[in-house]
Image 1 (cartoon, rainbow, N blue to C red):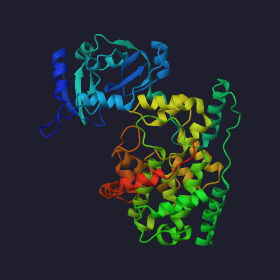
Image 2 (image 1 turned 45 degrees about the vertical axis):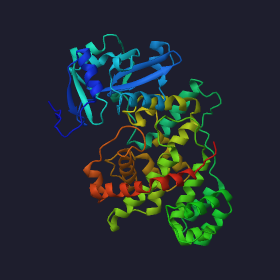
Image 3 (image 1 turned 135 degrees about the vertical axis):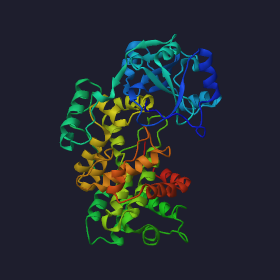
Length: 467
């Protein structure tokens, strides 16, 4: 067996769970959670509800929970219970995660019948890092009052396009046409309606590529946009930068605190962010959009500095890649508004999967494809569209590789600290080697950024894209 038995120093399953399983006559073995455990035998438990009441749903982590299929089966429009309600329930039993034990919640339970194909399954114990291995006969005993059915979609059958960017345009068009055909958005045209780039953003892009651009030039552009000017000044004045003296003007902010490079990329990120408004709906437990962007940009800024000097990419551009890495999320909400809520609900009930699987399953494309496509449409630097497009591929070694590699590393480091959404993913040694960085150095960078977390959150709160 590949499992690692627990030693005495490791935490154990909470006593409430051990007592409950003993009462049910269910034998179990405590094992350390680790990535090599087969996903088909790992039980994902989610608590859903509607006006009728709660329902526990159990399915293997090798599957995506399809709420549409569940609705057909049950005749109910179920969504994930609210985070505060789930937390209240877990806190009552002093649990850190929801164990897949129907008797715990006393609510009805629906389980994916393929779970019984495995000789034994692994369920959450309620303690972080500790799973319970339960043999099939005992697992069936736990499910005696539960209903078996088939509502999952095998993740292996969903193939997000991670590495064929030349297919993006065709796949995006197909997704739009499919929606048009289904009349999901009656007024959706054959083409995707993308708002034109704001004047300010166009001027900043011209300055970015002008080798002779000066501080006066960028000051002039920022000052013509009062909202942007106010944000640049308040940014420079924030405690995060701890600037000496009062910031009195945009020029002051640039010369004394932020510098030309950071301001031009920050201003561009702000201008692009304002082009698309933040969606009103969002998945529960997701880090707020701009908070995630600012944290990622700050970590990338530190990681870029930690790279060997000769291999460092352009720092301002890597910062911008961090700021815009999730831009495709805004775009999905803009292009597919009726389906965006459905995406949010599916992300809530599939916390074990990266969003690309949910989006591929529901739309046929991912936010990374559509975000990179828009960067090209707007004539943004090639490095930027590459960063957005390949940010989930830790093995990407093509042109401009440091950009997506840095985004990949930054988002995985932050996810390991509970920032972002989806499963925690390992950081391969090869990714660190390509960036010329040790694992310790990368961890040191993210720790340093998170020491200033409250100041960063304050910065992120300044990004108020209109709803």
